[in-house]
Image (cartoon, rainbow, N blue to C red):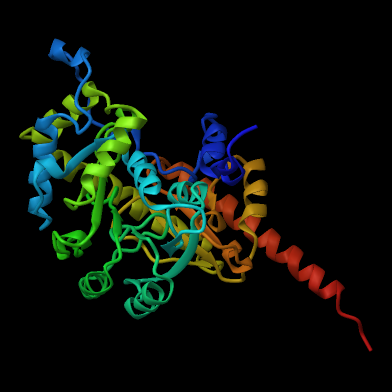
Length: 398
């Protein structure tokens, strides 16, 4: 009845949880949504009437030029003609999936990685090669081995405040990864939705900035984390030989991204107040990050381990005694607390992934944080106690 790829279509646990967390009595650490209190005002008062007409597939020239200017400030020199405006950065992942992936195509990803990217790659039939994350990023030597042994068609990385792990690659790792990509010629898709949400000084130079124009690279960004996510405006910048194919794919997908959202985003990032807005945003989320760090220490210090993120919106938490965070979620939801079990963020299943959970800190008030962490500590202890009881019951005295 449907195409074969529909058998590979999976639902998103995050989207399912979001439906539950809309209830006012739920304390949610589950989603990755920005806080409404941190968003700028949506003012469309002087909207030009010509925006009611169809636009070009590439996007509005003013916005593309502004993005190219911003990226030049990060060291990624590109022309406005290389910028393609997308309907959220998620569309960029979809376009790249269509461009590179057939059934059985090897794709290299971080472990863990962004859930929706894994879903998109899987839909088109990708075979995953995983690169475990450490505190400073992936292991360059392991990357070289995988690229040379498996010859993946695509390498997908989130090097700055990675989702879900919060990791930010250090300068040495960035340099080593770029050198290996130049050596092997592997196409890179670099995804940086959280780049501007930085709370401590770290290297945020894009990997693509270290590559040559002759290399194949794609760099994605979005206005959903710093602006208004409901507008669904993102972008993908690509090397000259890749960009035309992405434009054709977008043209056949939705013709162009909404022009009203593009117009608003161009005004937003060109405004004199934009740097001050970013500083206010960082202060807002830094305070919430610190509050979650303190609450985790009070309630889960003896039960779990984590590294405070230098940016982004997430804590990546591992239960010290192992566990099943999917089962924990069921118990936590009974007590009106939601979080994301970690196993969904891995491309290839492994029982050890059950010990991880992702906690978002963008929404919870201090009171909700305190109550939510109390509940998590309770359900973790209950699960450990039940597991110990089963182990004890299984011991036979001789």
